[in-house]
Image 1 (cartoon, one colour):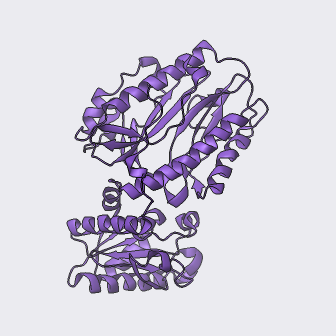
Image 2 (tube, helix red, strand yellow; image 1 turned 60 degrees about the vertical axis):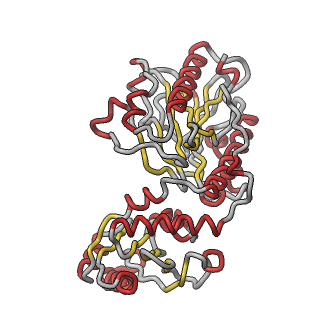
Image 3 (cartoon, one colour; image 1 turned 90 degrees about the vertical axis):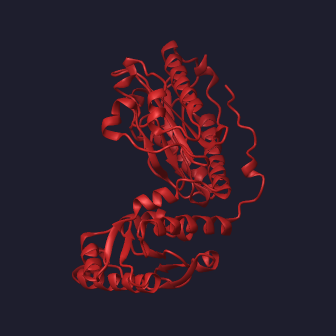
Length: 405
């Protein structure tokens, strides 16, 4: 089945972080220019990192935002953060200056929320005036109502930035793929250790903690969820790890969802069999079916194929597995799960997307196979790169020979 990918040409030279930052900023600014926006305000820590390379306390910033960036349609970005110029020495090629923030989150501002929001909007308006002259359109990716009102009162026209950022992040540079490969290598080191230490009596939490340890030890950052389950918890898919003890003969399925080194995501799923003994015929059948779905769907992907055509040509899932099908056939991947999320054909009226696969898109191709009410389920997922010739596997951890049969 060609499980091992040959060495990527993209990985032959060292990662050039400065070149990657310039590439990403340029992608964002081209989207701004296309949309006729003078600037974008980036509150989301993932978007801010993409455009500026700056990251600190990312998870904290998701629920208590106190750092943001404003990126003009041309020129360098401005970071707004307390603590001086901590991020600037490494990102000075794309960040022009650091200013104190005007934080209007209730945690920080309390009864001064509206006052601080006006100060924040004034900061934005000042940058827009400098960057765009008479242009009043500004894009924002995440905004509380009080912030929206303050921007409008400052005379600005606000548009949604998320589409621009998702489109900017869609096409990966060789340096980004190098970062992704580094993250996948750390994840697969963790998976190997999980497999080696899988034995009866270990709990789901203890097993998933091995991946966390590998990530932090390897220079990674966080894991988006604890998607690991065993035995009856594998069907349906979606249970997070618990104190459940893994028993001999059970399947253990997991999804790494790992934000690793350089902030890039390794999103790989595997299903293991807890020794001793051999998997049952039913377990092997589920596993082989999941492999068949993945291999079939990956073989379809090529530049120019539309998302609709992909869904139409995708592996025909037997009726008995459709109820528990995974939510998407494939999705984009980069600093986290990204656009597009390509659904099944039967879901197209509600979830269908316009677009085509393009060279240098990074994707995760998904499979979950489990009978409705069944005892077991199998989750597999591969991370790939779209190339002119089709796909290049980025994830390389082998399938389980005992489960293939």
